[in-house]
Amino acid sequence: MAIQVPAPEIAAQLEAPTPAMLHEKLVQWVFGELRDRPAELRDRLLFLDLGQHGLEGLPDRLWELTDLEELHLEKNHLKELPDNIKLFKNLTILYLHGNDLETLPAEVGELGHLESLDVSDNPDFKIPLQHLLQLRQLKMLRLHNLHLGEVPEDILKWLLNLEVLGLNGNQLVDLPIYIVRLNKLKELHLRNNNFSSLPPHVCSLAALTTLDLEGNKLHDLPNEIVQLVNLQEVYLKNNFFHHLPVQLCALGNIAVLELQGNHVKEVPPDICRLAKLREVNFSGNKIEKLPKEVGALVNLEVLYAKSNFLKTLPKAFGRLQRLRYVDLAQNRFEVMPVPLCMLGNLAILAMDDNNLYHVPKEVANLRKLKELGLSGNVFEEFPEAICNLPSLEKLFLGQDHGQQLTAVPSAISKLTSLQDLCLEYNALTTLPASISQLPKLSRLSCHDNYLQKLPDSICELKGLQYLYLHNNPLSTLPSDFDFLTTLKELRIDADKFTYPPADVCRIGFLGIREFMLMEKRKILCSIKLQAWWKGMMVRKGLGRYAALKPKKGKKGKKGKKGKGSAKGKKGKK
Image (cartoon, rainbow, N blue to C red):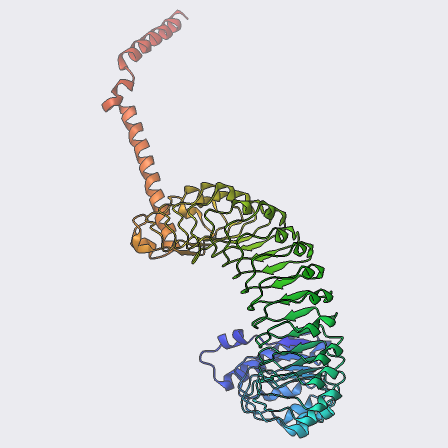
């Protein structure tokens, strides 16, 4: 049985809670939960999450839960771990990261079943080697951000069951040779250290599947890296590579390759050997073109190539039919490449901040495209070809530093799946009436334009929740604006408005809606009053309605004739 204690809810029940009050409330909550569980589960609490509760100590009754197998105490203010931790004989997972611990008690060494231990982000922590080395069943050990200048050799000598070793955010420049003893190690995390080269003996870890070297000072990788034949994920972001290490192309099991934020100028043709590659990140480099061999990466699903010098894509790019996400923003494209338009499964495409002036008609082939970013380009007019994307849900065409659009075509009504439409920082003076035919539109961003009036049809957008119109010369809103009952956020320049009045607009949408409803009630009352007055004038024949009043004389003669006839019949009888 598991219990995850909801920190915000418990703290919200207390006014200015002290640590003691929190302890008491936690105890009440945890044991109250236990009391409400079936009897057969009551004594078998296996998982308890007390993370992020602001704890400075632990409740005494916690030690009654001797069957615990997983305990989360991360992100509190614990300065020490009580000796009673030894009572949790079955504990396999213990998370202590993000506290103020300085060490661990000797009793931690008695947790013979412990498999996962995280003591990261304890600023003054000193590794208690003597106790730690007793945890021979450890499979995961995280020592992130502990200011380590070196890795204690004994950890590598004796914790031979380690599968995950986390050493991110330290000051390491090398690793002891004894790391080769960790022949079960699958993940090695060395992010944000000071490595200028990868120690060759790391390449002896034959079981390694994940190697994280992000944020170091690497220029190349050793040739021995080809020995890591099981490697599946490689993270090399923010280093000093001037080329993609060709040695990696020999590792055919790599599925994720992260090379963002380096100085790479070209991608080698040998990349075609990474047949299992699913995700690659080349963003923030100096790549001018992709080789045609990239077309062999038929399993590729995600491509990040933002902030490079790309102008075209090879024709073979169209073979990557599994691509779902492509980021080509901040490059040098002038025309959307036709091979890109051949990717029938593409769901998200970002081409913001290029030099695009044209979108080809072939873009209509992107039948599954849900999100399209074209902001910051140089379109002379709205690229109407994109109006043929039936699945499009989000369209970004803000031009904060591109060529400004002056009009939106009525054909935008064909985007019947559209939910978010962003047209900010353009030169629009109006919106098409056909915008009302976007039944799913929930967010419309048109701020920083030249809109002087909104079409009345905008009031038919029954699902609109967010409307941004600030920094426009708008001074009025449509009279049926109160029909937008789902609106959650409205941004306008209230001081510019005459209808509704500025003081009403300052209140926000609820004030505007109430004002418009009141105005309509006034109009309705006026109409009813006019109708009543007209009816009264007609009945009394007053003013210009005098000719409509019935003549009394004619009605009287008919009445006498009728009465005489009746009397005559009665007398004869």
